[in-house]
Amino acid sequence: MSSIGRASVLIGAGTIVSRVSGLLRIVVLVAIVGSVGSAAGDAFGLANQLPNNIYTVISTGVLTAVIVPQIVKAAAHADGGRAFVSKLFTLGTVILLAATAIAMVAAPFIVTVYIDPSKVEPDQIALATAFAYWCLPQIFFYGLYALLGEILNARKVFGPYTWAPIVNNLVSIAGFGLFLLLFGGPSPDVVQWTPTMIGLLGGVATGGIVLQTVVLLVFWRRAGLQLRPDFHWRGVGLRHIGRLAGWTFLMVIVGQLAGIVQTRVLSGASGTGPAILASQNAWLVFMLPYSIIVLSIGTPYFTQLSEHAAAGRDGDVKTDIVRSIRVLGLFIVVATAALAVASVPATRIFTNSSAEALAAAPVLLCFLVCLLPLAVLFVVQRTFYAYNDTRTPFFFTLVQGGLVALSALAAGGAVSAGLVPLSQLAATVALGQALSSLVQVVIATIILHRRLEGIRIGEWMPPLLRFIGAAIPAAGAGWGVLLLCGGPTGWVSDSIYTGALGAALVGSVVLAVYIGILAIFRTPELAPALALGRRFLPKR
Image 1 (cartoon, rainbow, N blue to C red):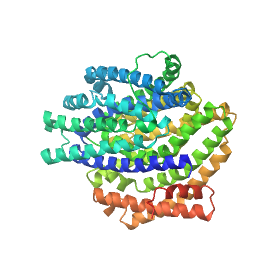
Image 2: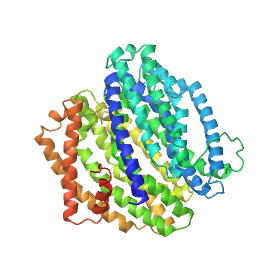
Image 3: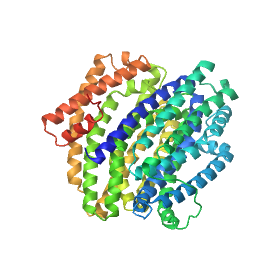
Image 4: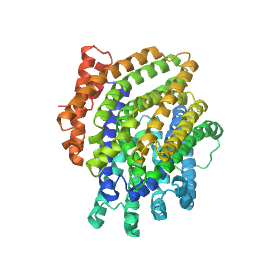
């Protein structure tokens, strides 16, 4: 089996366990704070999302775009890149400490940036601020986790970065379970929350991130690295890294500003229907196939692609692009079809009733519009990064961020004008984000095609269309099974457990029909994809 195949299986297996345990974490959390129409849930969702936003800036921005290619280059140094990594780690730690301290001081201001005070009660803002004080220290540990994990990835030690979040989920499940034993639930009303309840819930959320970070330190010897404080930052290439990271930082800031606009608009529905927490949970379900498929397969490809780009082997880079998109597309298309048909039972996992699942399912459906485009964007965008070009991604992300913000404002205006019901505000915002991502990937692909004088679009676009063609009747078969089970309001949405069972049943039918159609038409991508899938099965 190829090194990319082994790495993909390792990352994929860890991601599956991580995401499944993450869904269990959501289940227990929703039992505490509620989901649809929960003011307390939206308050906690906002506060716990703040450090995640910083993590997004650090991980998908500076680290993935800049650090991985630089570490790959530094590996050619006489010391194997050890000095570079120590300097980088020290610098990153100092920056993270400063950022965390500033965020803690500015917590009340940060909360009011994300929540429109004119749309929510003061008690909800106060609760969100209290949660923020407990959650914002996660910035430091999220940042260290991202830094350590990307360094391990660059050294081709892929497993720990993927498996470590499982520790966080297990700690959270245990801690949230303790909360339920002590205080019961759900507690959607903000006035029900005492300082002890706030401290326990926020402390558990942050404690899981701390342990998740500590786990990575165990694996440093496998990477052949020895970390030690090194404040002599000259020679680390700060000017070069800063120039690259500057564009990336601006790019991620654009995304965060768009997210702020979305959150402020969504706060208008808080306490009445799907809003902040429901959107976050729908996004987590949406990200399940993205994480399992795109990250597990795409991450090893990115490391190899960076090596080819650094060596000036453009032909190999184009081959990497074609192979990765075709493999990703085969898996991601059927995942989209399965989740679309099973949206209600899948949504039932993070809601407390069938009615709430029906209300939140449109949010998931709207997000799914951009699942395949985001898979293509993953490859295209990281190709720019492999060539140390972070300037170009900034501009096509600027377009996407602007469209996200404008679409969110338009959704809020449509609700105010009575054109869209308040219950569909979150779904309308999600659809705007999905369509904006579609525009982004089209622009990015055209630019990269011109930059590399062709990225063999004719070799990967037709297969994607074939996959979509096979997914349509497969989705029809899945819908038929759902109707036989009583439809979206049947037993599949009676409880969390039946929701999970119903989603698995529908998804299995969609997958089986999809594979059967591809096999009938002798789709060339099917054999290697099935070979990769069999690697996840236990050996007899």
